[in-house]
Length: 180
Image 1 (tube, rainbow, N blue to C red):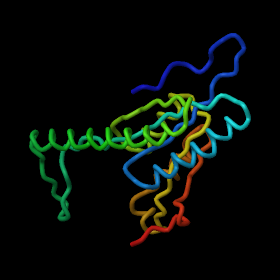
Image 2 (cartoon, one colour; image 1 turned 60 degrees about the horizontal axis):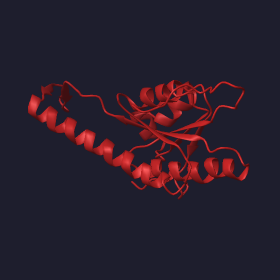
Image 3 (cartoon, rainbow, N blue to C red; image 1 turned 135 degrees about the vertical axis):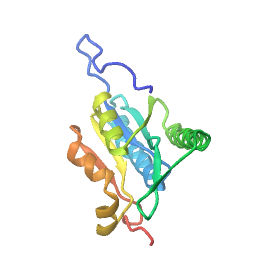
Image 4 (tube, one colour; image 1 turned 90 degrees about the vertical axis):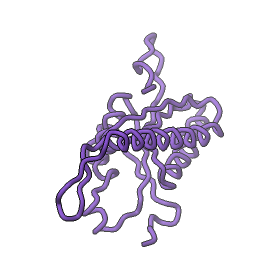
């Protein structure tokens, strides 16, 4: 994890703002990152203020001990399969962070930090926002309907309710509608 140090620099200077952006392999999260850079970072530049530090947060799923199957019984996964899954998830995290950093490169002078942790995305994102002293959390919305949200849960709704900083949920450019 690379989230920098404390926020105050002493000497009465205004501490740099910090914006946490949740990223994953979805188009929605990359759209939210682009929105943040275009609106939040560019607004700081237009106001002649220093650009906020952007903290990219990615949550990798925790390593399960077993996988449930439809009949309710679970099956244990061998250590070799677990290692393959672990390497795959690390590769996904690396790809996501690399793509997000490349989007940030279009905005010079923006300090980009990364945080990749294993765990439930709701807990990882809220925890990273708190640990980094975020002034704002920006995240995408997958545009799930009522039933999908009820069954799968909503990471963005959880973060809106639990984070101590303001949370901006950026909808998909097509109005947030997901094709079935």
